[in-house]
Length: 137
Image 1 (cartoon, rainbow, N blue to C red):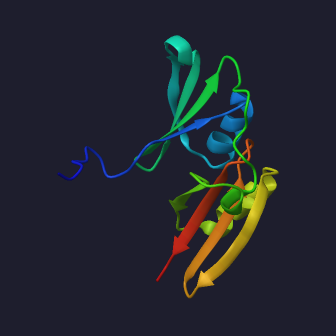
Image 2: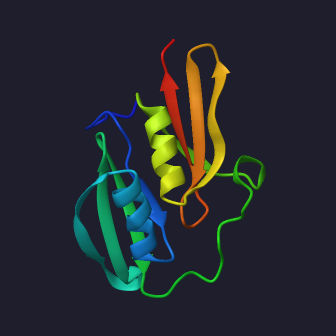
């Protein structure tokens, strides 16, 4: 049996160390719409900040007590598991510049990886990698 989708995208949960810096990146630098905040129940005591990226909801989760262990650093080659996520865009040069102007660490600076396909990769405040792809092929 195949998965029957209710919408055409997935949502993403990111546990963050600091709500203000995470919102500063995702809401203020990238311009994602802040949909609201929700308390986290029970043992997951904290706050979920919901932001809209296309039809994807990015859920920034700030627990009342930060986890004892950080995700391994090093991006794609740092460890197995989820290492980055991709956002398809049409204005990659503008986004790259916004990130630079916002003191965001740019890992790959608007590089053409094949004809008419460019990428930029940045690190969010917690070191999670975000890839932007402008595919005009």
